[in-house]
Amino acid sequence: MPKRRAKGEGTIYQRADGRWSGQITLPNGKRRTKYGKTQGEVRDWLTAQRGSIRTGAWSADTGTRLDEFLRNYLHDVVANQVRAGTMENYTRVAEIHLIPAFGNMRLTDLRPEHLQRLYTEKVAAGLAPGSVLIIHNVIHQTLKQAEEWGIVPRNVAGLVHPPHRRAAVPTILSIEQLDLVLTHTKNSQRGRWLYVAIYLAVSTGLRRGEILGLRWADIDFDQRSLRVARIASQLASREMVVAEPKTKSSRRLLTLDDATITVLREHRAKTPGDVVFPTPEGSYRDPDTLYEGWSRALKAVGVPHVKFHALRHMHATLLLEQSISPKVVSERLGHANVAITLQTYSHVSSKLEHAAANAIGQAMQGLQKD
Image (cartoon, rainbow, N blue to C red; front, side, top):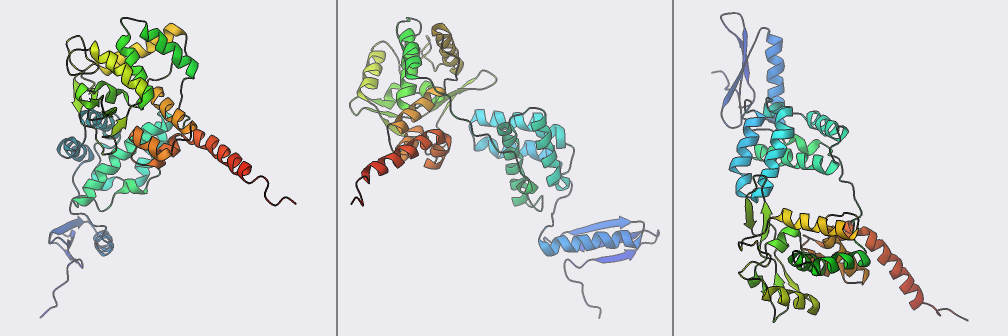
Protein backbone atom coordinates (compact mmCIF):
# COMPACT_ATOMS: atom_id res chain seq x y z
CA MET A 1 0.00 0.00 0.00
CA PRO A 2 1.53 3.40 -1.03
CA LYS A 3 2.48 5.71 1.79
CA ARG A 4 0.10 8.68 2.24
CA ARG A 5 1.78 12.03 1.73
CA ALA A 6 1.92 14.32 4.76
CA LYS A 7 0.35 17.77 4.86
CA GLY A 8 2.65 20.33 3.35
CA GLU A 9 4.50 17.85 1.15
CA GLY A 10 2.38 18.27 -1.99
CA THR A 11 2.12 16.41 -5.31
CA ILE A 12 2.89 17.06 -8.98
CA TYR A 13 1.26 15.33 -11.94
CA GLN A 14 0.68 15.84 -15.65
CA ARG A 15 -2.88 16.31 -16.88
CA ALA A 16 -4.42 14.73 -19.95
CA ASP A 17 -4.11 18.04 -21.85
CA GLY A 18 -0.35 18.03 -21.31
CA ARG A 19 -0.25 20.78 -18.65
CA TRP A 20 1.25 20.16 -15.24
CA SER A 21 -0.56 20.51 -11.92
CA GLY A 22 0.75 20.89 -8.39
CA GLN A 23 -1.28 20.54 -5.22
CA ILE A 24 -0.44 21.08 -1.59
CA THR A 25 -2.48 20.94 1.61
CA LEU A 26 -2.16 23.96 3.90
CA PRO A 27 -1.97 23.71 7.71
CA ASN A 28 -5.61 24.78 7.89
CA GLY A 29 -6.66 21.74 5.85
CA LYS A 30 -7.42 23.61 2.65
CA ARG A 31 -5.80 22.59 -0.63
CA ARG A 32 -3.98 24.97 -2.94
CA THR A 33 -3.46 24.19 -6.63
CA LYS A 34 -1.09 25.50 -9.31
CA TYR A 35 -1.27 24.86 -13.07
CA GLY A 36 1.69 25.39 -15.38
CA LYS A 37 3.01 24.63 -18.84
CA THR A 38 6.17 22.92 -17.58
CA GLN A 39 6.98 20.56 -14.75
CA GLY A 40 9.79 22.86 -13.59
CA GLU A 41 7.44 25.83 -13.21
CA VAL A 42 5.09 23.85 -10.99
CA ARG A 43 7.97 22.26 -9.07
CA ASP A 44 9.40 25.70 -8.24
CA TRP A 45 5.97 26.83 -7.03
CA LEU A 46 5.59 23.74 -4.87
CA THR A 47 9.06 24.23 -3.37
CA ALA A 48 8.16 27.81 -2.45
CA GLN A 49 4.89 26.66 -0.87
CA ARG A 50 6.69 24.04 1.20
CA GLY A 51 9.14 26.67 2.40
CA SER A 52 6.38 29.06 3.46
CA ILE A 53 4.66 26.28 5.43
CA ARG A 54 7.92 25.21 7.06
CA THR A 55 8.72 28.78 8.20
CA GLY A 56 5.14 29.68 9.11
CA ALA A 57 4.99 32.35 6.39
CA TRP A 58 1.98 30.84 4.58
CA SER A 59 -1.35 32.58 4.12
CA ALA A 60 -4.84 31.19 3.66
CA ASP A 61 -5.84 34.18 1.55
CA THR A 62 -4.32 35.34 -1.73
CA GLY A 63 -7.09 37.43 -3.28
CA THR A 64 -8.05 40.18 -0.84
CA ARG A 65 -7.24 43.62 -2.21
CA LEU A 66 -5.71 46.31 -0.02
CA ASP A 67 -8.42 48.93 -0.65
CA GLU A 68 -11.17 46.46 0.25
CA PHE A 69 -9.52 45.27 3.44
CA LEU A 70 -8.39 48.75 4.55
CA ARG A 71 -11.85 50.29 4.19
CA ASN A 72 -13.52 47.35 5.94
CA TYR A 73 -10.94 47.41 8.75
CA LEU A 74 -11.49 51.12 9.37
CA HIS A 75 -15.28 50.79 9.25
CA ASP A 76 -15.68 47.56 11.24
CA VAL A 77 -12.80 47.73 13.73
CA VAL A 78 -11.25 51.18 14.10
CA ALA A 79 -14.54 53.11 14.13
CA ASN A 80 -15.52 51.27 17.31
CA GLN A 81 -12.26 52.08 19.10
CA VAL A 82 -11.41 55.75 18.43
CA ARG A 83 -13.11 59.14 18.55
CA ALA A 84 -14.95 60.45 15.50
CA GLY A 85 -12.23 63.00 14.76
CA THR A 86 -9.49 60.35 14.85
CA MET A 87 -11.55 58.10 12.58
CA GLU A 88 -11.95 60.98 10.16
CA ASN A 89 -8.17 61.52 10.08
CA TYR A 90 -7.45 57.81 9.51
CA THR A 91 -9.98 57.68 6.67
CA ARG A 92 -8.40 60.75 5.07
CA VAL A 93 -4.95 59.12 5.23
CA ALA A 94 -6.32 55.95 3.63
CA GLU A 95 -8.15 57.70 0.80
CA ILE A 96 -5.48 60.32 -0.01
CA HIS A 97 -2.25 58.36 0.46
CA LEU A 98 -2.60 54.59 0.78
CA ILE A 99 -5.42 53.57 -1.55
CA PRO A 100 -4.21 55.63 -4.55
CA ALA A 101 -0.78 54.02 -4.17
CA PHE A 102 -1.70 50.39 -3.40
CA GLY A 103 -5.49 50.08 -3.64
CA ASN A 104 -5.55 47.61 -6.54
CA MET A 105 -2.77 45.49 -5.06
CA ARG A 106 -3.46 42.24 -3.25
CA LEU A 107 -2.50 42.33 0.41
CA THR A 108 -0.21 39.36 -0.04
CA ASP A 109 1.67 41.18 -2.83
CA LEU A 110 2.55 44.22 -0.72
CA ARG A 111 6.28 44.32 -0.01
CA PRO A 112 8.40 46.38 2.44
CA GLU A 113 10.09 48.18 -0.45
CA HIS A 114 6.68 49.40 -1.68
CA LEU A 115 6.04 51.19 1.61
CA GLN A 116 9.61 52.46 1.93
CA ARG A 117 9.39 54.00 -1.54
CA LEU A 118 6.04 55.62 -0.71
CA TYR A 119 7.45 57.25 2.43
CA THR A 120 10.47 58.56 0.53
CA GLU A 121 8.24 60.02 -2.19
CA LYS A 122 5.96 61.71 0.34
CA VAL A 123 8.85 63.37 2.16
CA ALA A 124 10.37 64.47 -1.17
CA ALA A 125 6.99 65.99 -2.11
CA GLY A 126 7.10 68.15 1.01
CA LEU A 127 4.96 66.16 3.44
CA ALA A 128 6.18 66.57 7.02
CA PRO A 129 7.87 63.51 8.56
CA GLY A 130 5.24 63.52 11.29
CA SER A 131 2.48 63.24 8.67
CA VAL A 132 4.29 60.39 6.92
CA LEU A 133 4.59 58.68 10.28
CA ILE A 134 0.78 58.79 10.57
CA ILE A 135 0.52 57.07 7.17
CA HIS A 136 2.88 54.40 8.47
CA ASN A 137 0.88 53.91 11.65
CA VAL A 138 -2.37 53.42 9.71
CA ILE A 139 -0.95 50.79 7.34
CA HIS A 140 1.00 49.10 10.16
CA GLN A 141 -2.15 48.63 12.26
CA THR A 142 -4.10 47.49 9.21
CA LEU A 143 -1.55 44.83 8.28
CA LYS A 144 -1.24 43.77 11.92
CA GLN A 145 -4.95 42.96 11.87
CA ALA A 146 -4.60 41.15 8.55
CA GLU A 147 -1.76 39.07 10.01
CA GLU A 148 -3.81 38.17 13.09
CA TRP A 149 -6.67 37.03 10.86
CA GLY A 150 -4.36 34.89 8.71
CA ILE A 151 -4.84 36.95 5.56
CA VAL A 152 -1.14 37.83 5.24
CA PRO A 153 1.79 35.75 6.52
CA ARG A 154 3.49 38.72 8.18
CA ASN A 155 3.17 42.46 8.71
CA VAL A 156 5.59 43.89 6.16
CA ALA A 157 5.17 47.40 7.61
CA GLY A 158 7.17 46.18 10.58
CA LEU A 159 10.18 45.80 8.29
CA VAL A 160 10.08 49.40 7.06
CA HIS A 161 11.90 52.43 8.49
CA PRO A 162 9.51 55.41 8.61
CA PRO A 163 10.96 58.93 8.90
CA HIS A 164 11.59 60.25 12.38
CA ARG A 165 9.48 63.10 13.65
CA ARG A 166 11.65 66.18 14.01
CA ALA A 167 11.98 67.27 17.63
CA ALA A 168 10.97 70.93 17.69
CA VAL A 169 11.47 73.30 20.58
CA PRO A 170 7.98 74.32 21.78
CA THR A 171 7.13 77.94 20.99
CA ILE A 172 5.94 80.02 23.94
CA LEU A 173 5.19 83.64 24.74
CA SER A 174 7.21 85.78 27.09
CA ILE A 175 5.57 86.90 30.31
CA GLU A 176 5.43 90.43 28.88
CA GLN A 177 3.67 89.25 25.71
CA LEU A 178 1.21 87.17 27.72
CA ASP A 179 0.42 90.19 29.89
CA LEU A 180 -0.39 92.26 26.80
CA VAL A 181 -2.80 89.64 25.49
CA LEU A 182 -4.51 89.12 28.86
CA THR A 183 -4.93 92.87 29.41
CA HIS A 184 -6.39 93.34 25.93
CA THR A 185 -8.92 90.50 26.22
CA LYS A 186 -9.87 91.34 29.81
CA ASN A 187 -10.79 94.89 28.83
CA SER A 188 -12.75 93.77 25.78
CA GLN A 189 -16.45 93.18 26.37
CA ARG A 190 -16.56 90.87 23.37
CA GLY A 191 -13.42 88.99 24.39
CA ARG A 192 -14.03 88.55 28.12
CA TRP A 193 -14.67 84.82 27.74
CA LEU A 194 -11.46 84.61 25.72
CA TYR A 195 -9.53 86.19 28.58
CA VAL A 196 -10.75 83.43 30.94
CA ALA A 197 -9.91 80.69 28.42
CA ILE A 198 -6.38 82.05 27.89
CA TYR A 199 -5.80 82.46 31.63
CA LEU A 200 -7.02 78.90 32.24
CA ALA A 201 -4.80 77.50 29.49
CA VAL A 202 -1.68 79.00 31.06
CA SER A 203 -2.57 78.14 34.67
CA THR A 204 -3.63 74.53 33.98
CA GLY A 205 -2.00 73.44 30.70
CA LEU A 206 -5.35 72.26 29.34
CA ARG A 207 -5.69 71.56 25.63
CA ARG A 208 -8.11 73.64 23.54
CA GLY A 209 -10.71 70.88 23.32
CA GLU A 210 -10.43 70.18 27.05
CA ILE A 211 -11.11 73.85 27.85
CA LEU A 212 -14.15 74.06 25.59
CA GLY A 213 -15.51 70.76 26.90
CA LEU A 214 -15.68 72.02 30.51
CA ARG A 215 -18.94 72.14 32.43
CA TRP A 216 -19.38 73.91 35.74
CA ALA A 217 -19.94 70.56 37.42
CA ASP A 218 -16.30 69.77 36.59
CA ILE A 219 -15.06 72.61 38.79
CA ASP A 220 -15.15 72.33 42.57
CA PHE A 221 -14.58 75.82 43.97
CA ASP A 222 -14.44 74.62 47.58
CA GLN A 223 -11.82 71.95 46.86
CA ARG A 224 -10.06 74.18 44.29
CA SER A 225 -10.06 71.42 41.70
CA LEU A 226 -10.91 70.91 38.04
CA ARG A 227 -11.76 67.56 36.47
CA VAL A 228 -11.01 66.92 32.79
CA ALA A 229 -13.97 64.76 31.77
CA ARG A 230 -14.64 65.53 28.11
CA ILE A 231 -13.19 67.07 24.94
CA ALA A 232 -15.05 69.27 22.47
CA SER A 233 -13.97 69.01 18.83
CA GLN A 234 -15.31 69.62 15.37
CA LEU A 235 -15.28 67.30 12.37
CA ALA A 236 -14.56 68.38 8.81
CA SER A 237 -18.32 68.29 8.26
CA ARG A 238 -18.57 71.10 10.88
CA GLU A 239 -20.40 68.74 13.24
CA MET A 240 -19.54 69.33 16.90
CA VAL A 241 -18.48 66.25 18.86
CA VAL A 242 -18.12 66.09 22.65
CA ALA A 243 -16.58 62.88 24.00
CA GLU A 244 -14.56 61.51 26.89
CA PRO A 245 -10.76 61.78 26.67
CA LYS A 246 -9.41 58.74 24.88
CA THR A 247 -6.70 57.86 27.40
CA LYS A 248 -6.68 57.25 31.13
CA SER A 249 -3.92 59.81 31.64
CA SER A 250 -5.98 62.51 29.89
CA ARG A 251 -8.83 61.98 32.36
CA ARG A 252 -7.30 63.82 35.30
CA LEU A 253 -7.99 65.99 38.33
CA LEU A 254 -6.07 69.27 38.63
CA THR A 255 -5.56 71.51 41.64
CA LEU A 256 -6.21 75.19 40.93
CA ASP A 257 -4.41 78.18 42.41
CA ASP A 258 -6.27 80.97 44.20
CA ALA A 259 -5.94 83.46 41.33
CA THR A 260 -7.45 80.99 38.85
CA ILE A 261 -10.32 80.27 41.25
CA THR A 262 -11.03 84.00 41.46
CA VAL A 263 -11.07 84.35 37.65
CA LEU A 264 -13.43 81.38 37.32
CA ARG A 265 -15.77 82.63 40.08
CA GLU A 266 -16.15 85.97 38.32
CA HIS A 267 -16.77 84.19 35.01
CA ARG A 268 -19.33 81.88 36.64
CA ALA A 269 -21.34 84.84 37.89
CA LYS A 270 -21.74 86.10 34.31
CA THR A 271 -22.24 82.74 32.58
CA PRO A 272 -25.68 81.09 32.65
CA GLY A 273 -26.15 77.39 31.95
CA ASP A 274 -23.91 74.38 32.49
CA VAL A 275 -21.19 74.99 29.88
CA VAL A 276 -18.19 77.05 31.04
CA PHE A 277 -17.53 78.62 27.63
CA PRO A 278 -20.93 78.51 25.89
CA THR A 279 -22.20 79.95 22.64
CA PRO A 280 -25.00 82.54 22.92
CA GLU A 281 -27.39 79.59 22.58
CA GLY A 282 -25.75 77.80 25.52
CA SER A 283 -24.11 74.95 23.57
CA TYR A 284 -20.45 73.99 23.28
CA ARG A 285 -18.34 76.51 21.44
CA ASP A 286 -16.72 75.72 18.08
CA PRO A 287 -12.92 75.30 18.66
CA ASP A 288 -12.29 77.53 15.65
CA THR A 289 -13.87 80.50 17.45
CA LEU A 290 -11.29 80.15 20.21
CA TYR A 291 -8.45 79.98 17.72
CA GLU A 292 -9.78 82.92 15.71
CA GLY A 293 -10.26 85.04 18.85
CA TRP A 294 -6.74 84.17 19.98
CA SER A 295 -5.30 85.16 16.58
CA ARG A 296 -7.15 88.51 16.62
CA ALA A 297 -5.90 89.25 20.14
CA LEU A 298 -2.27 88.60 19.17
CA LYS A 299 -2.58 90.83 16.13
CA ALA A 300 -4.28 93.59 18.14
CA VAL A 301 -1.36 93.88 20.58
CA GLY A 302 1.39 93.31 18.03
CA VAL A 303 2.55 89.91 19.30
CA PRO A 304 3.86 87.50 16.59
CA HIS A 305 1.41 84.71 15.89
CA VAL A 306 1.79 81.42 17.75
CA LYS A 307 -0.66 78.57 18.15
CA PHE A 308 -3.07 78.56 21.09
CA HIS A 309 -1.31 75.33 22.07
CA ALA A 310 1.71 77.50 22.96
CA LEU A 311 -0.09 78.36 26.22
CA ARG A 312 0.04 74.70 27.22
CA HIS A 313 3.78 74.70 26.50
CA MET A 314 4.12 77.87 28.55
CA HIS A 315 2.43 76.19 31.53
CA ALA A 316 4.86 73.28 31.42
CA THR A 317 7.92 75.45 30.85
CA LEU A 318 7.11 77.79 33.76
CA LEU A 319 6.65 74.85 36.13
CA LEU A 320 9.83 73.08 35.07
CA GLU A 321 11.88 76.28 35.31
CA GLN A 322 10.66 76.61 38.91
CA SER A 323 12.02 73.11 39.61
CA ILE A 324 8.61 71.45 39.86
CA SER A 325 9.02 67.68 39.48
CA PRO A 326 8.67 66.52 35.83
CA LYS A 327 6.40 63.74 37.14
CA VAL A 328 3.98 66.33 38.52
CA VAL A 329 4.15 68.36 35.29
CA SER A 330 3.49 65.19 33.28
CA GLU A 331 0.39 64.40 35.32
CA ARG A 332 -0.96 67.93 34.98
CA LEU A 333 -0.49 67.80 31.20
CA GLY A 334 -2.12 64.38 30.93
CA HIS A 335 0.89 62.76 29.29
CA ALA A 336 0.98 58.97 29.21
CA ASN A 337 4.33 58.96 31.00
CA VAL A 338 7.01 61.35 32.21
CA ALA A 339 9.33 60.38 29.32
CA ILE A 340 7.06 62.24 26.90
CA THR A 341 7.27 65.35 29.06
CA LEU A 342 11.05 65.19 29.31
CA GLN A 343 11.41 64.65 25.58
CA THR A 344 9.04 67.48 24.66
CA TYR A 345 10.68 69.94 27.03
CA SER A 346 14.27 68.76 26.70
CA HIS A 347 15.37 72.38 26.21
CA VAL A 348 14.13 73.12 29.73
CA SER A 349 15.68 69.93 31.10
CA SER A 350 19.05 71.10 29.79
CA LYS A 351 18.75 74.32 31.79
CA LEU A 352 17.78 72.37 34.87
CA GLU A 353 20.76 70.08 34.39
CA HIS A 354 23.11 73.07 34.43
CA ALA A 355 21.35 74.43 37.51
CA ALA A 356 21.75 71.05 39.21
CA ALA A 357 25.45 70.95 38.40
CA ASN A 358 25.93 74.44 39.83
CA ALA A 359 23.93 73.53 42.92
CA ILE A 360 26.02 70.45 43.69
CA GLY A 361 29.17 72.48 43.06
CA GLN A 362 28.12 75.07 45.62
CA ALA A 363 27.16 72.39 48.12
CA MET A 364 30.61 70.80 47.85
CA GLN A 365 32.57 74.01 48.18
CA GLY A 366 34.96 73.89 51.06
CA LEU A 367 35.61 70.14 50.86
CA GLN A 368 39.24 68.94 51.01
CA LYS A 369 40.57 72.41 51.91
CA ASP A 370 43.84 72.41 53.76
